[in-house]
Image (cartoon, rainbow, N blue to C red; front, side):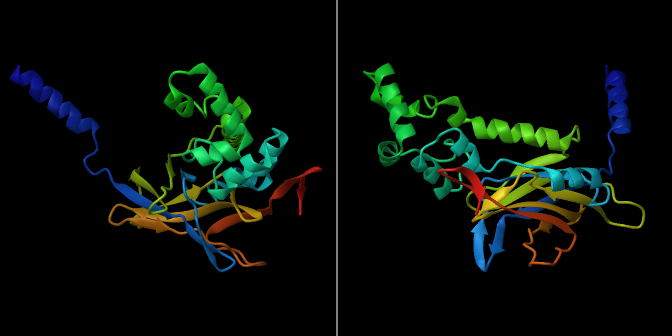
Length: 256
C-alpha cells in the first residue's frame, strides 16, 4: 500500500507543473465621458490570450459588427415608453437587473399586467404574485434582449473561446479576473492579453466597444482602465469603437 501511494505521488508531481504562474487582472469600470464620470455596473468583459495583432480577425469582426440597441429592441417589441424608461434609469438590459417595486408596478403597464396575472394565479398568496412578476412578463420583454445579444456575441466570436469572462459589480465597479495562466515569452516577465466587452455599452447617446491590450504577470495585479479617445485621436494600445445610438420614436428607430 505504501509503495502504491508513493507511485501515485510521483506521478502527480510529474504531471503537475510546480512552476505554473498565474496572474490577476482588474478592469476599472469607471470612465469619463465629456467630463462626467460614468459607472459601468453589471457589465461583462472577456479576456483573450494575445494582443491586438494576435486577435486581428476578432477585432475586424468587432469593427464590422452591428448590434441592435436596447431602446430599438424594446421599441420593436412594442414595449411602453414607461418600460423603456425604467430600464434606462439604471442602465438595465432586462427586468432582472433590479428590484421591481410596488411603485414601479403601478407606473409601468407591463409590470402592472404581469402582477395582475400573478394575482389571478395566486389569489390567496399575494406575495407569490409579486415574486412571479418577471416570470409573467412576455418572453420577449423578460429575456429577449439577453438572448438576442448572446446570439450576436456567439456569431462575433466565431468559435474563438475567451480565456475567462468577468463582470463589474455595483459597488467597486470593477471586474476581477483571477488565476490567469501566464506564460511570459523569453526575456519578459509578463504576457500580453486582450480584454474586451464585445457587445456595446450604451452611455448617453453613444455606444462603446473596447478591445485593449494589458500586460499580466505573476508578481503583481494588472490594472486596465478604459480610455475614451478624443475626436480624431486613437487610444494607446486600444481599439475603441464609438457609435451613435438610434432612438425609438413614433417612426421607429433612427439616429438623431
